[in-house]
Length: 194
Image 1 (cartoon, rainbow, N blue to C red):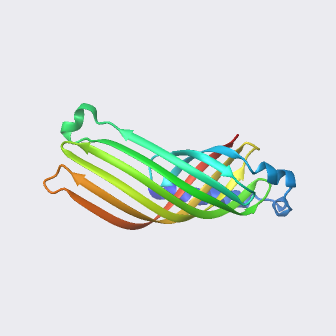
Image 2 (cartoon, rainbow, N blue to C red):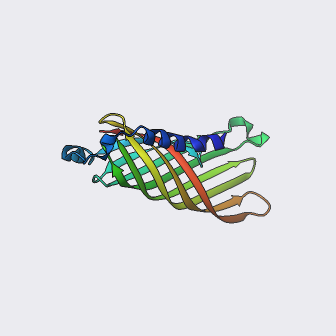
């Protein structure tokens, strides 16, 4: 199912690009350019790489540059079933995407830009605990389509480097494990402008 979810942003991008008409090639209206310098709320759902959604802000600083900080939180409590091997877990995440618009029309924009992320997770139960910290950096590319003046949707794909440090305690041999990974990500989201 994960493979199917990863293809969704690619299909959305293709459909959006196929729907662009010749009007998209016309010069931008100066009023439209000023409208793009605003702040909004962003809601995203990663199609790959995570099972939790994100909430954040989008700040369009100019007609070519925007910043999108995002945050995520998830928790699972095992309750009384800890003795059966279930665990309590917490996960927090933060990311910053710099959106550099490559092209913009009245309703369709394409962009690329760097993405930086940090996540922390902790789980425990049955005498074993683990703490994980992950640092990531990568690059994204995407398409943003403006539905109305206040609402736009986006789909993006990216490639990045992830460094993870995991510490395990409560076992006979407490240990720390580090890993280095190259991973891909894709996500779909919604921007609600103020």
